Structures are given as structure tokens and as C-alpha cells.
Length: 472
Image (cartoon, rainbow, N blue to C red; front, side, top):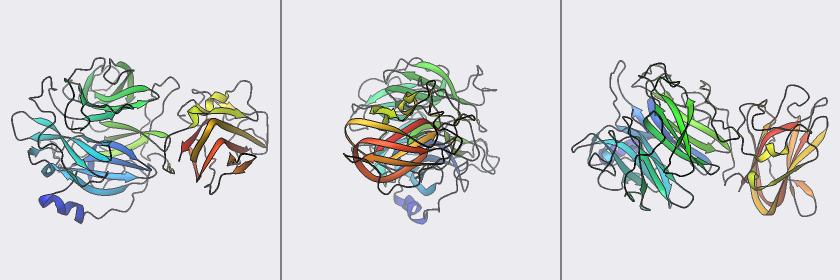
């Protein structure tokens, strides 16, 4: 039920005493030295941050004990650094207890931390807002009182689990709620006041709690916890993650299905984020040693989309995702490029290169596949833009059909200099691993054409499921 800081006064020592832990090796849960819950991912530059509440219940405890929020970070989505407690109940002088779900949203160089916290007044849970000048704070109370409380007209039966989404036009939206009571409202540009009435969004079938909102390819998504037994969970004591889509950030929403089955804890809380060209789901379970329903731990796994924008059900792992290092910078430029190639098989499709698909594995044809059978040796694929683009990394997902198309022997990234192709400067290894995006970084180049030169194994042809090119 709780979800996803800054330390002042007597809590200031937390930030000083908690020296950064060494990065943890890739595994799920991502940290086991203490218990974490209700994760909220945020990508800033080349770093993914995860904001999470800390479960402090003793072994055998029968209720939530949560008094602080902590921060983890990663530059490859696989190894994590613990930054300790960055906010706690004392961050909000008006609050009484219960550091439950939270989320951080950037705006104009500041970072707003929306939290579920127990107020001292009438009612139970409120939503507060802290603010800091960096993803790690320090954070301070931004408002001096709750943003949402039981006195807010049309508030939820349980005012918890805030998620904030800022659209391309700069308008920010707040979704929250529990006890089947999803609520939504616009935020003013100051991020600490509502801009209009609280509404009850329609179409979030079987909503229970824990909404998470994001946007992909012009389509809006809400992922949320549900506890129905109609294809969701085996017992209503547990929860799955359902999701819905809309063409407007306030809905109406169309339910699409279950994206994450029930986990080993009764509660199920998730966040979704794109990082280094790959989508991830961050959630909690009870899998850490000594874990339980009130001693949960954060996990990270890959999230895959179909060509029509629907999401595939997540495969929960104990290993976590493979390392995905990136070079920072901006978004994927591939969708705006025109693709060409030295050869494409008549039954394959060049459109596979930049159609935005996220393969489940190297044999996945569901989002189309590019292949150059029966050609051998060196072949190429290429992106062309009408004006020069500054590019500093690519990510390639190779196609392997288990027949005539195999993973390549080698590859090289090249750019058009104006008169000829040349290798991009300072490029890292051009990876040829299957079942993952292979990221190659290099010194930024400004070019109208980018080429991937692919050399096959002696008796095979090669193929690509997705080729991403990122702005520097």
C-alpha cells in the first residue's frame, strides 16, 4: 500500500553518516542491506535514480513501519549505488508518521518530491511536496502543508501514491489514490498548487492503488495496482499491475491488460522509465533474505512493447537486466531518419530498424525484422537525415532466426564526412551479443548520414531488429 528526502535538524546526520555504499553487483532485488518499497525511477542525463521508502518492520511484524525515503542510482541499470536517506518524516514539520509512496518530478532545474505522509490533523494520509536543487537534494518542505488531504474536494478515500507527469507542452498532471479511488488534477507551474478541480478518471478498470503515468510515442499510459481475481491475482490479498492507455493525459482511459503479475509480497507497486534506449519496470517484492509483506525490496526488469504500443507481460527475474551503459545526451533520432541498406531479403523489412519496437529476444519477429540473407561478408544499414544531427551513441538489437541469419562476427559505426564514410571517432566496442541492446558510444559527430557496417560469420547472413541512434 505505501509507495515510493532530505535530512534536516536531528536527521541531518543521516546524510553525513551514510557514506556511499560501493555499487552492488547486478541482481534482483537491487539492494538487500535493508528493505525498500514503492520505487519511483527517474532518469537524469546518464543516470537512473530510484526513490524508495524504507521498510523497518521487525521480523514477523504485522504492519508497515516507514519513516524515511532513500535514493539509489545506476549508470547502467544493473549495478546500483546507495545514497542513503535523502528525506524523512521530519522533512515535513506538519507530518506525523508514515513515509509511504513517493515520486520525484523535475521542473525548471528543481526536483519536486511528492510523498504519501500521515498528517497530524483530521483524516489519515496526505500528499506533501519537498523540493531540492539536484536529484539528491538536499530537500526541504516546498509548501508548509499538504498538497492533497481529506479536505481537498473530491479527494480519494486514501490519499496516497502520487505520480506526476509533465507533458511536452509543459503542463504537469498529478494522479494518486487508493481504496479503488483514482484521482487526477492539473498542477500549476509552481508544482505545489492544483490548477483546477480534482477529477475521477474513467476507464481504469479494477484500480486499487499505486498509479504511475508516462508517455511513449504520443500515447499516454497509466500503470496501476489492481487486486481483482479476473486474470489478475489468485487471491484479492495480492495485487498485479494493470495498465491503460489514452490519447489525452486526463483520459478517458482504455484498459489494456496485466503487465506485471502478482509478486511475492501482497502489495505491488511499480514505475516505468526509458533509460539508454531501453524500457524498464521497477517494482518491489519480498525476495530479499528475511523479506516479507512489510519487509519488501526493489527489483528492476526489462519492459517490452509491441509494435501497436501494447506492453508485453514482464518476466520477473532474480538476475536483473543486463548492463546497459550509455553516453548520456538526448533521445533516439532513428524514428526521424530514412533507412537504407546494401541488401534486404524480400520477406524481411527495412522498417524494422526504426519502428520503435522493443524485442523480447533476438528471434522476436513481432515488430518486424531486417535480414540480408543470402548475402555474406560485409553488409550495411544506414540512416539519413535532411539536416545534420549530433550523435554520440547507437544501440543495436541483433536478429538471429536460428537458420540462415546469425549474430554477426563484428560491426563498426561510420559517419558521412561530406565526401566519404569514416569510422566514428573514439568508438567503444561494437557489441554483437544476442537478446539485448548493444550500446556503442563515441565522440559526438555532426552528420547527415550514419552507417552500421556489419560483417557476418563465414556461413551466415546478418539481421537487425532495432537500431537506435542518440542525440549528443
